[in-house]
Length: 303
Ligand SMILES: NC(=O)c1ccc[n+]([C@@H]2O[C@H](COP(=O)([O-])OP(=O)(O)OC[C@H]3O[C@@H](n4cnc5c(N)ncnc54)[C@H](OP(=O)(O)O)[C@@H]3O)[C@@H](O)[C@H]2O)c1
Image 1 (cartoon, rainbow, N blue to C red):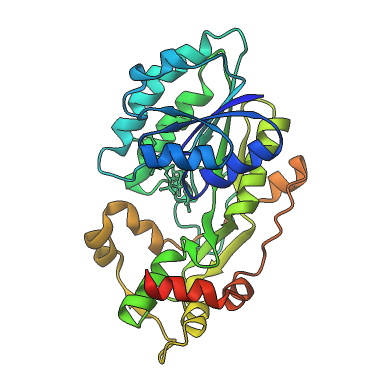
Image 2 (cartoon, protein in one colour):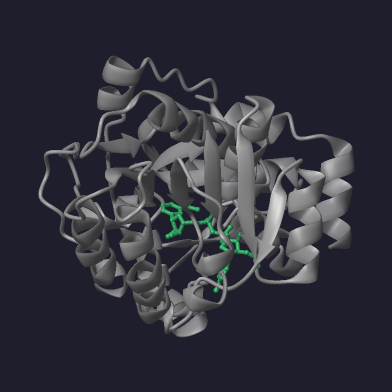
């Protein structure tokens, strides 16, 4: 397949890009800077210089495509408008192509709202965090576009032992000596390791029929306090008890989108396991944190 990846240097996009290249697909990835283009070349893909907010500057340079994976987002105040411009430019071109391309749109766990004791599935109504409400309109638009085979993936919170959604805990530990959690230690995050999530994108590209949505959650809901404590132990902090801050405080610091960190959620990845044979391998984040190498610890301390 010839696949265009948008966001191919990102937390989710990079392992997707590497996975596609490893499976011998012909991969083009949009790069908004020279350094991103260099990373894409390093991953074995072909960079196309451009910004998702100005698709008119690069869509004319695209060869015929079999699939597009949308994983680009800058989390800025204009992210909704930027993605709308992308869809305005790209969808008509894809829809008029003779190849009927697949389009994987990326939603997210925060579109399901706080679930508390319930476990959300793909059938659950969307109750998005206000800062990401625009995403529900965009995914509905993509699913309703004639001429493409649209699929939606809703990633859980995407982690690596010392990166992804755990990065802020590590940064707090290194800079402040005290890790902060938002809301309470009992707030649960659905989790998925970035490599497991990438394997779900590959399955979706290769096996899924149009119109389907999948939740990419390997663990339904994992208490953030346990993550914070595991990282504090690995950093050998004198105090492993996290400081609890409010959603208002994190929103003031990072923006309204960060309120999602206070959402107590449980999401099921069962449909992907059952229908696609998705088999996440990373199921014990505390053990992965504990096993983080001394080299990595040093790189945190020196970053
Ligand atoms: N990470 C999670 O836990 C998670 C969970 C659920 C849903 N999601 C969703 O998944 C998507 C990707 O998230 P992520 O965590 O992988 O983000 P990320 O690590 O911040 O990566 C974002 C990617 O988008 C690219 N990008 C940003 N603005 C761009 C622009 N204007 N033009 C071209 N490229 C642009 C970046 O490229 P450069 O920086 O190299 O230029 C980078 O490759 C987002 O929509 C996010 O809401 C993420």
